[in-house]
Length: 340
Length: 163
Image (tube, rainbow over all chains, first blue to last red; front, top):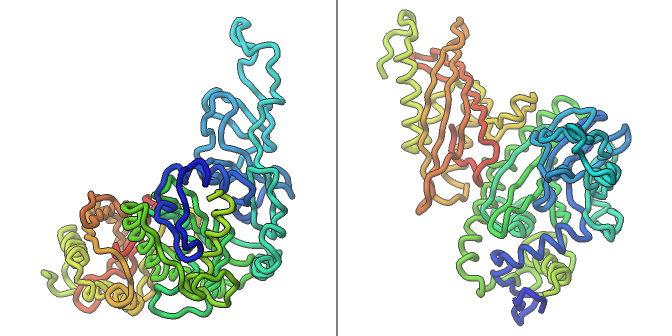
């Protein structure tokens, strides 16, 4: 039992206690150990920032960041926080810039995050920054980056294993079958706020069991904790999670195609994307179910949910995703990381 | 509907407003079966986030390219879709006629949809502007195009019903 003061119920693999979805202390620990710990977080696609100077803002966990193409073959990720007074200085979603400027006092950083200009550094009538002020020590906080087949990953921890090792060989094979090194092209975005705990989207997405049709052509890879990589018929998307407390998260979906897709294929992918969007018949079910679930959990933190289907309590790889095994596997890992 | 013979009446703002009032009343009252009939057989219906529209992306939140596809959506909504019960109420304003050509009348209008979930305070589920092409078709007005571009990109959970 760790400092949170919660204890997992006796029937370890068969039940998930409801406080997991609602306890604010658990959530704070999750941010610390999971989101800001040795895990890779999805930032975006290289295709979103194709030219040098292109940038995109996003949120990793609860931390706003900026992704920049800082050189032809280099992507940099920084915390979106000026080193002067802590302003979230970049307030647009996308843009093009030669330098990154904070509008508050015009502190200016180059594309690699180095502080290159401090107006009035010597002050007005000499009362400027102290003599020992060293701009080199005030560059933007850099976040560790790994770009893999067009997908940009970032991590706040130096201990995170290289991405391929992190995924493991089985999921690496699934990942590289879709993200195979070909250039990608963005089809558009969907964004939703779901009033439910961020872990529910990872539990609910793989099931398909609440859909009235059975789906055999749906493939989803969850890269814990931040993203679900979707391959549904011909519709390809990344579904990124940004938690906002224990009772909500933002879901940012980026739909994409291969840059060399024919216009007909591009149109087909766009049409099929309608199944998996805020009005789509599949995720509308899922996100509605998540919101309903949170309403149930929030009121009864000491109750627990049953996850014994499909193999009762065993945790093993299964060729299908009817719930049970995947959820149990996720919580076995979660308990390890959370020391619960 | 007070239309008069197709060939003679110029399309007045009043007639247009009546058409839009009929449209939103049909949807507000959840007479979904009647919704597709407001569109021509081949049509374009889109609800699209502003960022996608402005960047030239075709990815829509809701899209139909024919009355039949609209009918599919109605079938889905009535028979297979799972969602918590709610009310939508639509408010249109700022009607402007932006074009008047043989192909039809181009209309721009603000759209606000207020959602009310049971035991919850009402909130805005969609706020945007529509760009429509309204035509005379078999004795009545219909949409040949209705494109709703919404500012409210961060959708509160889902967008269930049409705009």
